[in-house]
Length: 328
Image (tube, rainbow, N blue to C red; front, top):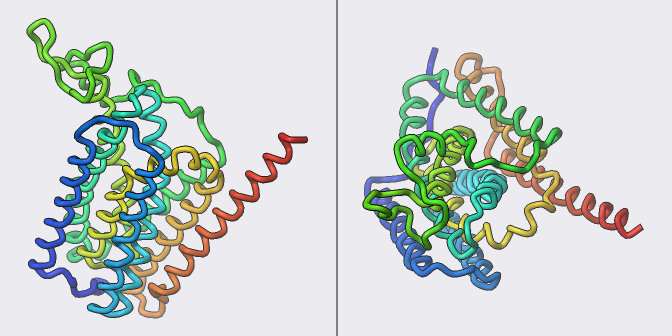
């Protein structure tokens, strides 16, 4: 059996180093901005969100003009998938920040550390995924199965929503940490570790940050295979993840009040994950049976945009109907 062909990577060592340096510089900038705890205003959040959306759009133009339209389409499709999944992840972040009662002026620091940790985890997953895809044809089938299973879970959770409450004490990561470290009763400003009675102790801020990092592991399991379903280029997979994550801190505060309005987002994400999962399975099958068709990037981008447009429209309609019902 022949391995399905992966694209020749566009990321030369020089491009990789420049990209990583640029991403680190943006993270340093974010840490400098958040070094003094403050409540994020809507103006500040919108401004940074616009910046982090304009940045990948401009980068995609460079990819398109330098490496061709096919790679440009792969970048935009991958970024759109990652951004959609990131918005869904914000629901979980919102629940965790609320359950830990994180003060609003400290929330952006927790989110930023969580995003930084997520990017490191994605980098590891991307490296492992690229190595597996290059050497084992069944990896396409495995990734496809993961996405199809995730799609079913997302659909089931959307149709039967659980109580939107999280008990921090019941989280595995919290129980594990408490076995080895004492935890203070309340927050101590932006500090995560303090010395009390001659002993080091963690603050609830540290627990909240660890909980966010723990969820990032779960998110990476479906996020990375989803982009590999769009492009086999590890560089494009990395930059789409990086751009989607970089603006997540600011986007959280922009969408904080609007996330609940996207009542049908779960259905859309389930459909997108199922589509990409089927695309990966077909790509694997094409390597065995040449008559099995493959789905091109332009069609994939059209499907993703179409699904998102539909669920956003239906969500708006559902909200209007609910508002009318309440008025009457």
